[in-house]
Length: 214
Image (cartoon, rainbow, N blue to C red; front, side, top):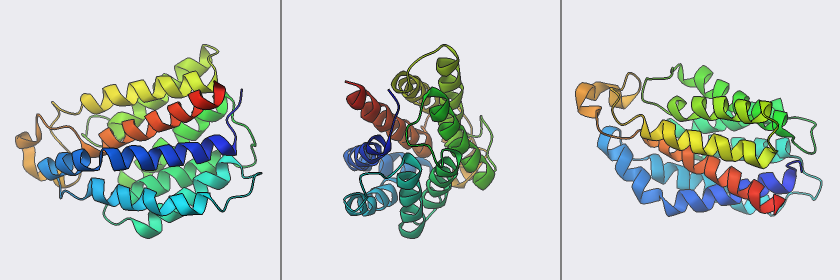
């Protein structure tokens, strides 16, 4: 079963809910090694997306919804998270433009474009203790699952699991990018807030797909 516009809407609604649920946690993580605004900014951005979802036509495609979310995040979220997530969703929308339903390969294309957009915007690499440390294992796991013939929902589930592991793996790293890099060794032992929020957003994507497939 492919993933259509209704799935993308459910993903964005789920993202808003999970960000609100973990807002304080994300603020704490960012306060430990950054400026403390990550949870607040993401909550404001995804909250701004919600009323716009109600206005979408029944034939809206995944690309339509992703572009709507991207432009809303870029226009409402300050700091680094708005441009990074906005770019990710905008690149993802371009990658799946014209597709009414996403198959497993479509999901991989979406995730890959999102990750590549973040890399292009932030110039970070795996191991820098950033959002990329969650996105890259997610893309790798999704690619492997699609190659194994898994459904789009299972591909997203594999990506979400890998993102969670990637976020946890940032804890022992010394940051090489962003405000956390100023802390040097003092950043060790703290989880990157962007990597953690990525794992929550991909969990929301997987949950929306699972509910649609049920």
